[in-house]
Length: 185
Ligand SMILES: [Zn+2]
Image 1 (cartoon, rainbow, N blue to C red):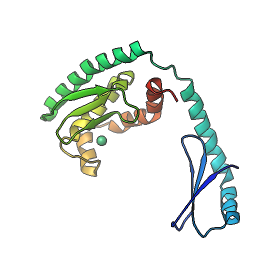
Image 2 (cartoon, helix red, strand yellow):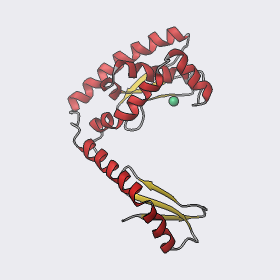
Image 3 (spheres, protein in one colour):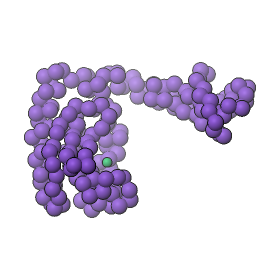
Image 4 (cartoon, protein in one colour):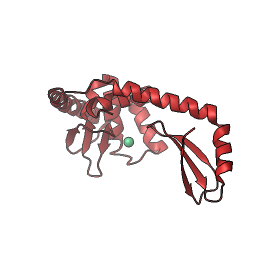
């Protein structure tokens, strides 16, 4: 089994399979290569399973149809109209004021909320179900009240979106596929 090792002043060994399906081992300076090899060998089944899963994931992402420039532009236009409206509607229900709404095609996040109260959404949300879009809007609006992901923040989200967990899971499961349409892997 191939793996890379990063040694540091840590005390324990940690094994990780990266999104790129590579095995990464973190180990203390003083551990010998032989001891390390024994530990990796002991977790062989687990590692193989994870490598296989990441490879399958990579493969399915590589098959995603990339958006054309025209499709991407149209997505942004639709996102601006849709998410601006959803935000206005939801903010009224929640009794909140916010700043500007911007729409971007981004690789790493679905939305964000600045300390000035400006909201930013990923245009790729238009490829997600409406319920998921509403969840992201509620999530960002709740950041106007709680600028963190504390239990207090999640209690706010739950108040306006009682089934937020399943909507959030949808993004976790399908998010990479959506991102890959604008940012091919
Ligand atoms: Zn957040």
